Image 1 (cartoon, rainbow, N blue to C red):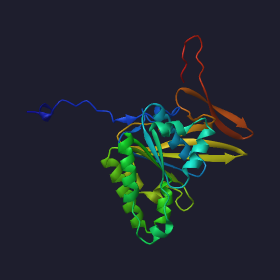
Image 2: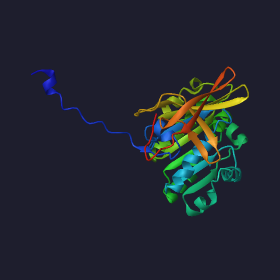
Image 3: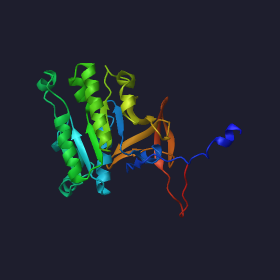
Length: 275
C-alpha cells in the first residue's frame, strides 16, 4: 500500500485563542489580538509609550467588561491615575466597579540584595485579587526594575521563570513591560526572554531635524501570523493610534528628511476606501 494511502486526512488548523486589545490599529497588526493565557513582552526605550499602551489595553478591556490588574514596579498608583486623566481616562469608577485594580509592587532594595526576596508574596496578593475580580488581563509594568535589583544573572532568570510559570498555570493573559537601556540595548541581551514570551513587541522612537517619530514592530508571535513591518504610531489626546492597512500612509518631506505619517480614509457616500 502506498505511504500516501496510510496517512490520515489533513486536520483543519485551529486558530490560537486571542484577546482583543481594543487599541486603534493594533489588533489588525496582531491578526486579532494578544495570545490568550500567555505572556507578551513589550520592549522599548524611555518615553516611547510602553506603560501607556499597556494601560490602554487594561482600560479599554475594563470598559468592555473584561476586568484587569495593573502591577506597578516603578510608578505610583496615584500618578498613574492622574496621568490617565490627561487622556480622558477616569480609572476611579472602574476601580470602584471592580473591573480594574492597581497594585504597587515596589521592591525594597535592601531585602532584594540580601537575598531574602522572592516574588511569592506579591504573586499571592495578585492571585487573590485576580480570583476575586475574575480578572484575566494582567500588566506587570517595569519588570526591568526587578532585573536591575537582581544583580546575579541566575537569580534574575529564576525569578522571571517562576513569574512566567505562575502566569501560565493560571491562564492569565499578561503584558510585561521592560525598558531598553544602554547596557541592555538589544533583545539579545535578554535572550532567555524570547523563550518566555509568546509575543514580543518593540516600540522605538527616532528624532531627526527636531522631529520625533515612533514605530511599533512585532518581533515574534508564537503560533500566529502577524504584520511584519514597522508601523508608525502616534499618541494623541485619547490614546494610542497605530497605522495599519485601513489607513493611508504618507511621507512628509522636511528638507532632506522623510517623516512617515498616516490618516484615516474618510468614507464617501457610504463607500469605504481601504489601501
